[in-house]
Length: 163
Image 1: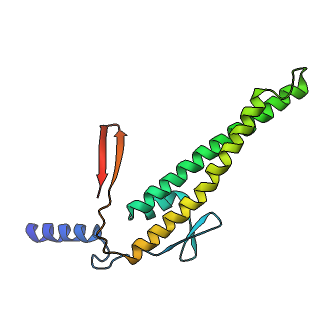
Image 2: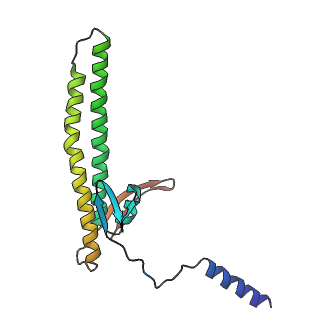
Image 3: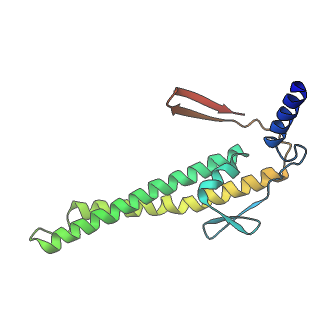
């Protein structure tokens, strides 16, 4: 009796933690990029979840990471440039200091540099979506594609290679 009870308990435990249907494949759906937003089947997907979606295609995740880097660097330069210009303007207005100084020119230069960087971001996002959607059509690829990242966590540092 103990053996039957143990077997039923184990069987019940296994079925409780099993997947719904191992033969049912979740087919990936094509992604669209409109007005700076990502859509799958008409549903908007947040930008932070797109990294998981693009993970299936290494070329598209590489392009997506480049676009996010461009967004960060461009936003930093834009904010820094505007801040420098406004601070220098405020100092010039509220004191007897000469206006414009080098801070204004540096701020305008940072804003000017940030504009082409931010413009290239949209093109990279569109290329990532196109690459992902093309990868859905071509499931058999003879091209060897890999991604290498440096990782660090509480257990140590290492290198991650994805084929």
